[in-house]
Image (cartoon, rainbow, N blue to C red; front, side, top):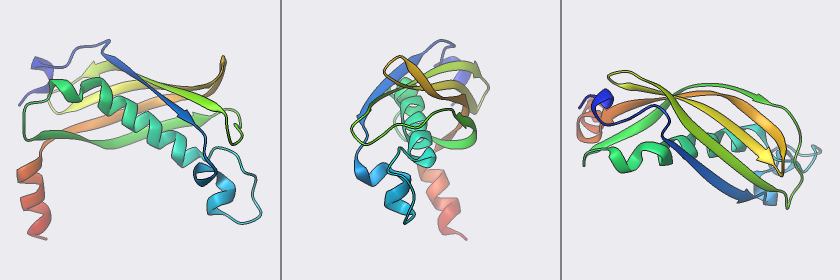
Length: 131
């Protein structure tokens, strides 16, 4: 499968999340603030990126995150409504690149780039099992 045949620049998706305590820095690291953790924001960015293109993939194919270049710009407390967006900006044969952002209300709290690799799941699992 060649991603260039099915994925188009501009495809996008959005996710909404009310920040729960278990997605805060303080949940993972004692004595730290109960604010939205950077790895959890990146997770939402990766999920939004997958959501933007998953419906186009042929059965048996998935994408896996391969690169992140993210800046976390501002803290968000428990209960904040965070909107995460992803938009396809480049497509290669097996790599799809995204521009990603996260917002707490109108305030941008995160931005960056993300890449996902296109893989045949059965072949991937077979190679993984051979290790």
